Image 1 (cartoon, rainbow, N blue to C red):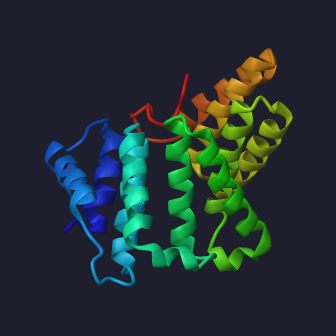
Image 2 (cartoon, rainbow, N blue to C red; image 1 turned 135 degrees about the vertical axis):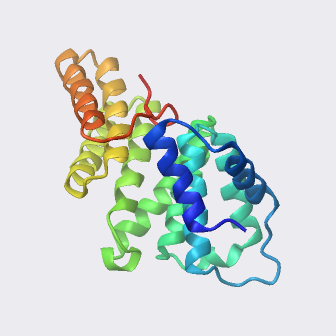
Length: 221
């Protein structure tokens, strides 16, 4: 078994020191590929924490194929979580699956999931899904989809909305990801001043943390 402490320590050491514990990495990957849910109807809080951490680890490492395999297997082997529309764990896993589809080139699947999550978030008050981090991530994903579709006005609106929430809640990694999207939007639109401003703000965010890792899986230059 993998504990939440082990999973989040892996994330911390990767961001703080720019290195990975190879033995723990092998354990995390082995766990992700070999666990099963036979006769299991619910997850414990600790298990949910580990699954969230695993998705984040795959994202940080840029291993979108593994992220897609993990989230797909979770929904296939434990379909009961699909029935609780406002379950924050379900919504977060859907967001990670959408990001995996987007990063592996399946825009149609990413768009379908993103639209579903957006519909749920708009229909229910925030207390049903426990926090703005889900809304922030969904808007970041939506901005990437709009950018792919060359719907630049929609992409800017989604990214700016996500940025407002990310700054308000001090979600630095989400803010970095979102600024990288804005940087690409401004590049397409030849908005040089805004592009330079986005790049400067990314530098400021990085300098405001003690992390030395440049987040290659998250930030595109």
